[in-house]
Length: 208
Image (cartoon, one colour):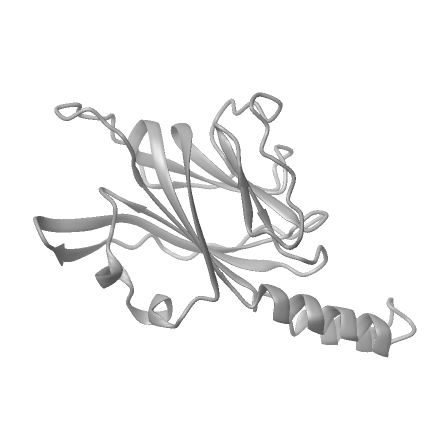
């Protein structure tokens, strides 16, 4: 059973870009346990068997279906750190401030349909964190960035080889030191919306 994910307070921000200001509506940070090396980003009622995402092979970062993403961690035993952001429109490079300004090693993009809510976790049994989307129901552009995927997997493999007893306190302490070092940034913004629609607004964060 995985630990309940921790949460940071939602954060708003505004970035001036050409043509106007882009506003960050939500920002939360939490930990995810990658079951079998994977975790999912999906909405309410997502059908994983409908237009299923292609299998992740060869260390691929992500695979996308119509209503969900699957993200690969290259290891399945160490919790990863996830930052989830919602923006009112697609942010540009000027949106990178603080920890996000540090170079990311990998990046990818996808478009998914979400019904006013997004969950991030390993499955639908409760081991997820959920956020209601201020943008309501519709298509969302998802920008994914990652760092230290390969480094954490290599370090964990080294621990497995170095410690004969994987149940020992020494092994557990060494593995705990890797917790949260592998990082993912997920940025959601409306995709392909018709102008003039005023989406339903919801509270920003709910626990899942």
